[in-house]
Image (cartoon, rainbow, N blue to C red; front, side):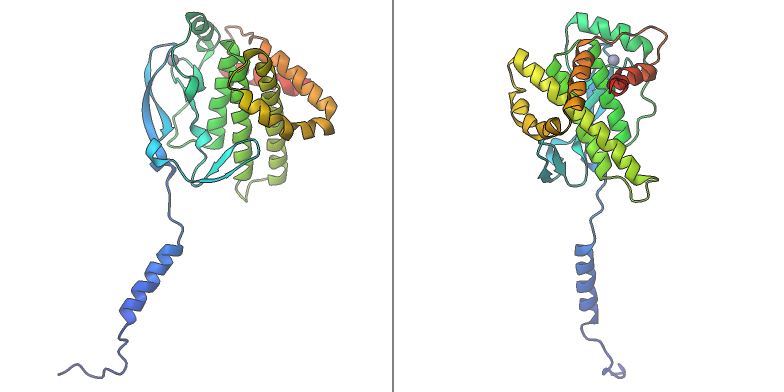
Length: 274
Ligand SMILES: [Zn+2]
């Protein structure tokens, strides 16, 4: 028939090849883009009335929950959802956790306009996805906003807690080739513990005064953090004194200070104390 020798014919070679390819594809990690999870949601700033887009996680595309830390931080596959928990207005500098972003009393708006907007120089170019540093910067802006608008202590504590979680996420995901990786991890851990202590003290304070939902946190945080309290009572005392000062003293700003300076001074108050 003109087909020549068939002894060498690999009768099932093509199917084996296809099976191998399919198996390889199965074993290959699926490339997931963080952008696939994100939604550009239109928000209206309660301070300056500007409409802007903010990044949130698509409700239908929540990544898979992998584990939960003792302080309730959830670890998800593919991305750290906490990076997208803050809404920040690119025009006036008002920022808040997504759940507290919305209408607010005119007295608070006035405070933010005077103390944040007057000094705000912008968020810089909006990245496609947030690095940990991008996210932490936005949470710190939200934290300063809570202080300026004299938000409830529980709201301030809630932001502190999330900053601690982001610092932990950053530490756990540091690239292997990070220069001075051990020192960087140490510094991140120290800052995380500082934020956890601030959060814990804030929730305790709020629990005694605000009598509401932060009960869930105050019930769970102390056992985790009190171990550290027992080990470092002096440090804990400093933390709680510093936090009290930090959380209760409205941020004093002058017109000439940039947002960077405001952030730096307000957030390093604790560090310089301790
Ligand atoms: Zn605004």
